[in-house]
Image (cartoon, rainbow, N blue to C red; front, side, top):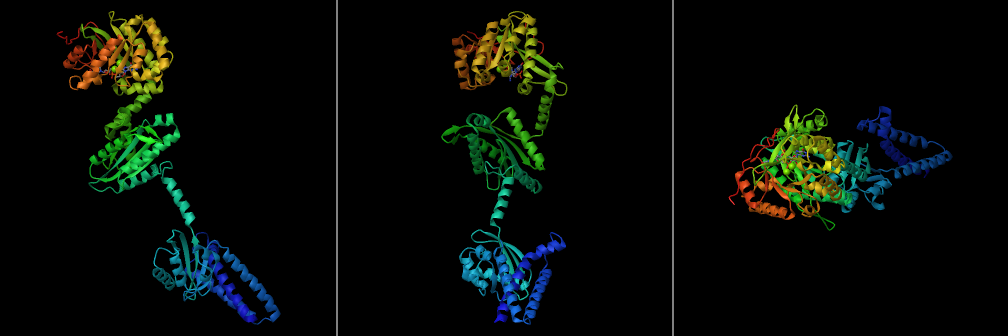
Length: 632
Ligand code: C2E
Ligand code: MG
Ligand code: MG
């Protein structure tokens, strides 16, 4: 009686000891042999054999001890077995033992939990087949048929090799299984549910290469794909990288708030995703910048067609919570491998192409070309050298005549600034005025222009006037009236011989402040012209409210005169309007005899353009100009 109880306890103790030894063996060996060392099959089996030997030895010894001592020992062994069992049941891993006939010897509580097994399927003697069949029916076995699963386990026992596998159950749980063979042809295995850990790892990996706001791949992932595209280039095939920058996004974000801005970016991401093929990659690079990697195309027309489509798609109004928003996009395109064979080169060239579009005309696309590099170099020089150019006396004024349609005489010379750059030669104003405005250099530069223009005009015969262009920054600066009166005083030019040209955008910027400044300038006796009329918002209300003397019709309307009926009608209407308001009109950009004739017929009084004279450094006020004089 005591003997059989003893043997049962010894058997349980031994099994539990084996289990713990197996679980602990990698740790023990790691301690003894150094971290990172994995238990080999031979080492594992040796350990199991040692423990079994010890257990048998103990059991053999126990049969010889007297019964009181035996009872005491049985109680101690029972306690020990209970402790082992408690330890097993509290492991975070599931543990089970099977014998050589694939019958369960023992399983802990966690094993039953992981596979959702009922109590009667974890009693010793249960066959592996019964457990697998149950698991298959309840979605806790890997997505393979029970027969295949059993055959796999059998193969493992036959090879007598340890194995580590990770399986995903039909219900989507991820389980890692460590299988170790035992001496009787069975095995002990540990099972761990790593689903949450794997999900957290996947989330971290996703965050590392995706943009949180839109869920699109981020710049890091784009670089990875670019790397693949550039290293696996196939002869005759190409890829295109399109870099997009949204136009007017900043004003939506600033005026309607970040929540609307965020919603807009998400809506843009959705449209872009829907616009490309599955194999293409849409990424958000940050802010309002996106990228599309169009892979495996046969010619550049595919890339430009996509760019055209994207521009239309983004230009269509967005409906966000009942609000209609309109934005646009500019796109720079680079072809691989034609324009670059390394990811950084491709990205940098695409950025250059985008920059080129944005500095010219937004809402368009531009294919990279090597000349852009030169242009960028020029722009960088402009930014770097502008601050010292004024002190170095590198600015010069050119003058272009404005003639009277009635007499052919010059009535005004418009002063147009140029920068005589020591490396790049004569740089036109469109290239440096925006930089001067952004850096504030325009204030001292504008002051110099005013003084120089007035000084030049003071030498011309009266009543020839000089026209000086003003920048919005100068008007907003608050010093303008003082500067103008100072220039007039210093040069002795009569105020009525100075005309100041301002643009529509300036008028819209701050009506009240602009109104006061213009009124004060008018008080001085200078004339004020509205330049480039028709290119801005062309709101007629400020024509009535603000004290203008002259309207200059933008050359884009003059260019199409005689060819497009609309342009002729618009110019006619502006001339009529100006006459009603008591203003004079100058037509800008008159290049041909025909344009001059039509303008005269439409009643335009003054004209400016290459047909009458180009801007030049030494104006000749006395030289008569050839103009068409209407027969009427
Ligand atoms: P804007 O005031 O409209 O000046 C007229 C521009 O049209 C000048 O270009 C002139 O050369 C050009 N132009 C004149 N006639 C013709 C023509 O028949 N055909 C064509 N295609 N173009 C013609 P420019 O000198 O390059 O000046 C460009 C712009 O730069 C000016 O436009 C003005 O907005 C700005 N700007 C020029 N000088 C100054 C300045 O001193 N101060 C400020 N703030 N801006 C200036
Ligand atoms: Mg002008
Ligand atoms: Mg103009």
